[in-house]
Image 1 (cartoon, one colour):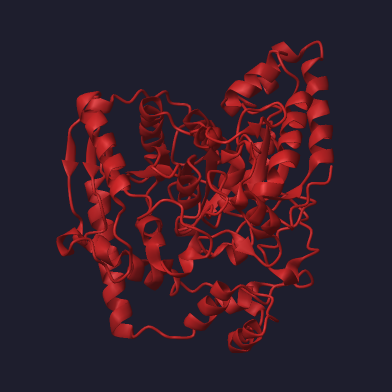
Image 2: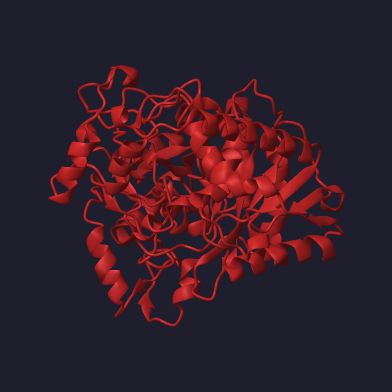
Length: 533
C-alpha cells in the first residue's frame, strides 16, 4: 500500500513504526541476496528512529499537536531507501568507485533532510552504476543488481538499485537522480513509477558526482514509488519550499480537457524504424502505448493527436553535445576521487590516465568498469566546432518547439525505451538507447514514468508522460489515471505462479523459486550485499 496510507496507519495506532521497519528489515534480509539492490543498511539507526516515532505517537498531546499533522509530516515512521550517490550522514557515497571505499558522509543531502523532516526513516542505500554514468547498475564495489521479474535481466541505471528495491518491496519508496533517464529507465525496467522533476524544482546539493552550475539545469533528484499516489506528496517534500509550484493549491484535472500528443518513436519511422543510434521500438511497447491512447480517447473523452517530431532523430548527439561541453569537470577527474580527497574540488583533481586503465583492464587489474574507461577515453576526442555549433542550434530549436508544443495543459506520450529489460551486459551492444529518456533532460521538462503491465515474457511495459515546464502535477495526475486503468505496479509473484515457492516471511511478493537455474547463477553475483542487522 502507498506510503501515505502506511503513515496514516501508524498515526492512528493501527500499526507501529517499529513493526513496519522490522517487516522491511526482514524483507531485505530475505530478498536482497537475490536482487542485490540495497548495498548499505542503517537498520539499527532506523529501529531507533522508529522507536522514537512510536513514543511520540503514544504521548498525550500528539493528536492535537499541529507540528505532527499529516500535512506537516506525511511520511511519519515510514522506511525508505536512497540512491547510494546521495549523501546520508554516517553512510558512504562511493558511487561505485573503489577509491572512495571508507568515505563517510558528514551531513545529509538537502532532499534527505527534507524527507527526514517529513517523518521518513532511511533504512538503506541502493546500488548504482559506477559514477552514475551507465544504464546498467553494476560497479566494482557492490557488483550487479538483478531485476526482480527476471534475475537474468538488468534493472537499468543509474538509479537501478532504487527501482529494484521498490519493485521487490524492500522499501516503500526511494530517492533517485536523473540526468539522462537514470530515474525513468530503472522505473520502466522494474515496473514502478518514477518522476524527473522540472529544472530547479528540487535542490540537487549533496551528491557525488557533484552538481555544477552548468549541470544543475539537466540533473534532477526525484521520487521512485510503487504507487502513483506517493509521487506528488514525496515531490512536495523534496522541492524547494519557495519553488515555482504551489503544491498546496488543489488541482482536479479533467482528462477530457487535457491536450494529448502521442509520439511513437524518435522520428525514424519513415525509414522503417532504422536508426544509426537507437534500436527500433519493440512491437509490444508500441501496442502498450496505443492502448493508452485508446483508453484516453474512449474512456476519458480526450482527443489525442498522433505526431512525429523529426528533430528527435538527433536526440543522442544533442544530448552528448550539451552534456559533454557544458564546462563540467572531466569524467577522468571524477575517477581520481578517493576517500582522502573528498574535500578537494573535482576541478582540481588530476585526470586519470584512461589509456593505462584500459591496458590494466585487459589483464584484469583496473579498478574501473569497461564503460567508465571507454567514457573517459571518448571525452578526449574533441567535437568539431562546426558540428558542435550545429547541434547546439538544433537543441535550441527543438527546446523552443517542445516548450511551445507543451504550453498549457498539454501532455506528450513517448516511449520509455526501445525494448523491455535486456539481459545483463546487453547495454554494451545498444548503449545509445538511453536517448529516448536523455533528450527530455536537455529539453528541461518534467517527465513521469508509468508502468503498463507485463509483456509476453513477464517483463514490465511502460511509457513516459511529458509535460511543460513546472507542469509536474499534470504529468503525475495522468500517471494516477493510467494506474487506475492499467493496474500500475504488478506483484512479481504474478510472473512466477507456474513455479512452486515458499512465500517470503510476512509478504506475498517475489517468490523464492525452486529449481530455477537463473536464481542460482545471479544470486551468486550478489556477493557484495551487506545485510547485517
